[in-house]
Length: 258
Image (cartoon, rainbow, N blue to C red; front, side):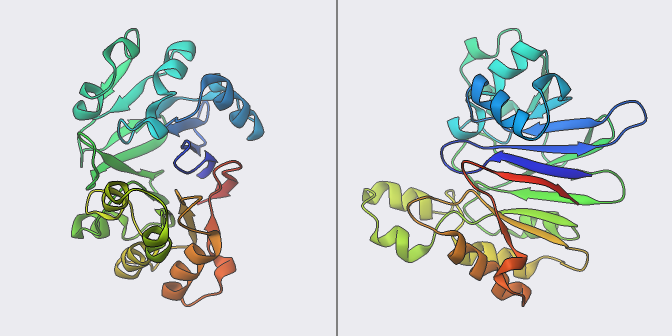
């Protein structure tokens, strides 16, 4: 199993998870917050075209995660998996003609050779989830767009071989920013986004016995830096900051084996 990012941040998010199958690879696109043309361009950078995808899974209805989902799905006849709440919160004319499948937090479903597990997270959306991906031997955990380090999150992410973990902001930089107070409160609130130290707390609480890859994701361009995010996570791992990779808004990251 391997995965790669088309881009990660408040301007758009998309991640591809791939697993070889007996007939053809299974390739799942997690979210799509880019235009159709931009998504095609970014997929090409990974050596893929949209027609090579098996399905799209969606975390929640915020534009940086869903704005390109239904256009891409309709153009290339891709099935879309999302919670009832996410679908109900979406623009209904956008989903016309889309092959929709509803997923339930905690209930596994298969897309080809991949087993996908949605799990509930605290975020200011209708029914937000994040996802675990498994091929039966290796396990990838993804956590972005969550405001609090719940016991359920810790349980779900324990035992992963690779982890994509939100490090949205540094508390001091957010406090000193020129964002309006209401936006600062939303970002730092229990249904907002993870600060570097909270991400580090989650990493410190999970079972890391088989963890080999950690990628810091969804960094704010204004209120964070790769160096700060890396330092926070590396302090938990007891390693150099170079061991922690960082997802870029423009470049994402290249294929990474789980």
